[in-house]
Image 1 (cartoon, rainbow, N blue to C red):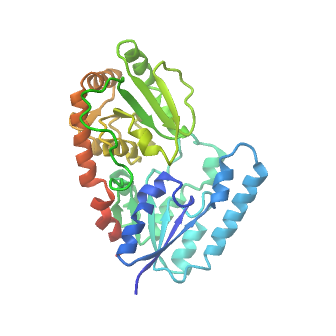
Image 2: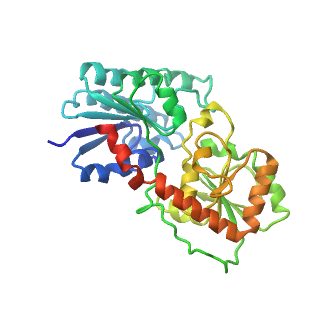
Image 3: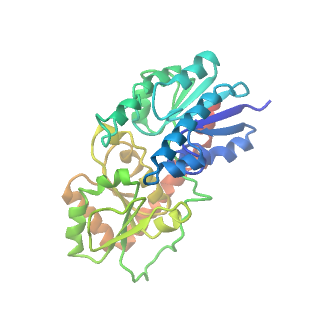
Length: 360
């Protein structure tokens, strides 16, 4: 008899990157191995669409209310499942009643998965009412109640290991066969257009670019290049080299492939140490060299001087970007080195057995 898994998560299927790259892309693998599964998002597609619109407060409140009702009703539908895979949390606010009921009333095996330091206050929300009602302390309890804990990197695993002996480092991975595919021809020795430095992320992470902007402004006076930002909100800084493309799932890979160099600046704090380096992995999977802050897992993903550069000071950032802007062969070599590492360690194929071990 095949085992059945219920994936309990915040967002609708195929909408949120954290879900797409942590467990949704493994669904074909699970099916191939004989598992049955169902996904139970907190937000419906309709609620997800309304939540990020301007205004419509009544619709938003109504959508959240019905989402809570649906989540509560789910507690009476758990009998068929062998595993309850909970990504981040069962509901965005309040105590972990759902998780408690799964463990102690239904006595089901919880696989608890997270890819950020979600037990900490997000720097953008620290001290706010929003932060308090998220009930951050519930993360410790859910770790204790879980059969296994799936963590995106070792920093997160070290935290979870304080409360659970069955912790698996399950990195966020790339689907290099069906999604992250190199589209530009290599080598491009006859390329006439200016090289493109690029960054991708959400509006909540745009602030990480603040320390890099002065460096780019300086480089603009010396070199011909473009700075591409792919995000769900236009950045509020002005650069002569700036190109903005709104993030679009349908064109994401095509847009990323325009870059010649990918950057990932971070602040060196406990929140950033919990990040799983997904930007760097995306760049590398598309054969782009990376310049990044040596914070958290970036130090393990990026081999300094081989697949990119780890830079702390303004001088290090300037030197790294100058090298890559002026040495096309170096860009190509580093990009291919990064691609090789991603294929070996950070793809669905290379991590499938590790992912499947969560359900053994």
